[in-house]
Image (tube, rainbow, N blue to C red; front, top):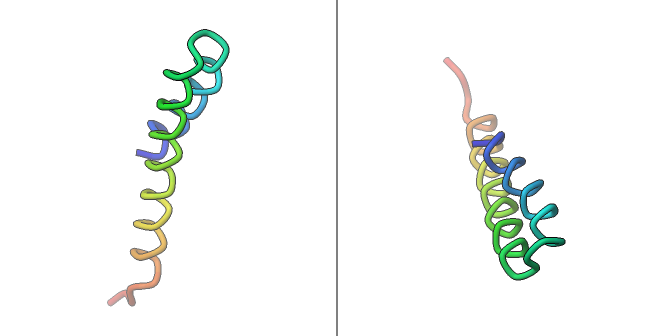
Length: 50
C-alpha cells in the first residue's frame, strides 16, 4: 500500500503537467493512501506485543 501511495503521488505530479485536474485528483488519492498507511502503521506499532 505504501508503494501504491508513492506511485500515485508521483503520477499525480507528472499528470499535473499533462492534464491538471486529473493530476490533482490522482495526487490527492495518493496522499490519502499514504496518510491511511501511516495511521495504520502507527496504530500497529503502539499495540503491545506478546
